[in-house]
Structure formats: structure tokens, C-alpha cells
Length: 158
Image 1: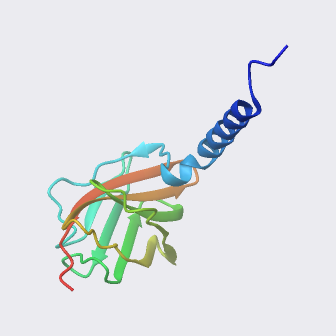
Image 2: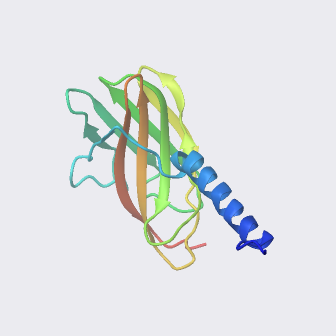
């Protein structure tokens, strides 16, 4: 009597199981989980100034990206200032809203006194200007805080 499953069928099932296990294990890298998501103060424009968010229960998280306005394919200086929040790690994640622009997450360097900074660069979007969703990920001893920001990057004029 012949088996209802062929070797090809079993190979496909095994491959799907392996993909599912890897996807489950590594999904936090691409889709970080946060214990607390807080919105930045409304009306702030990262193209013009630093923007901040108030942490419930006290504390403040401020993000600055320079130069102004924020260009594409140009080195950017990212600065984060924390007050009332002790962080062990701060990351910034750039994600294209209308087009997947790949993995663009950077761990910022601790500078002391609640300050973190680092360099970053936005890739150019071939279709024109791009709406970017920027998530600041702040890890404390007790929780992971996510602060989402949005801005539109202009068309590269080079």
C-alpha cells in the first residue's frame, strides 16, 4: 500500500515548519514588542525642531534629528534626551509607510546623563517623497517604551 504523502509533500511541510519557527523566533527584531507606547506631543515637526513625549507617571523622552529639514542619503545626527527615565538601551527604527525600505534600525550610543546619540541615514525612495514612520525604542529595567513619530522626507535632488 502506498503512503498518502510523498517525499515532496513531507519536504514542503518540513520547510514550512522551519520557516514558521524562524519567523516566530526572530519577529521581535522586525516588529519590536513594546510594553508601553506613548504618542509624542501633537503638532511637533521633526524637520524644524526636537520633539518630545511625556511618559505616564513622570519623565520625558525627546528626539532630535539634524540637519533640518531632514534629507535623504545624507548623514543624520540622531539625539535622544531622557529625563525621569533610566534606559539601558535606546534604538531608533525608520520604516517607510508606503514602501518597505528594508531594515533601518540603529542602536544609539549612551553619552551619560540620559543622553543617547548616533548617526543614521535614510535611503532614497525611487518614487519620490516618502512618509517615514520613526519609532524610538527605549529599554528600561522594567519595560520597553515605544514612541512613534512621522515625517515626510523630500525627493532626493542629486
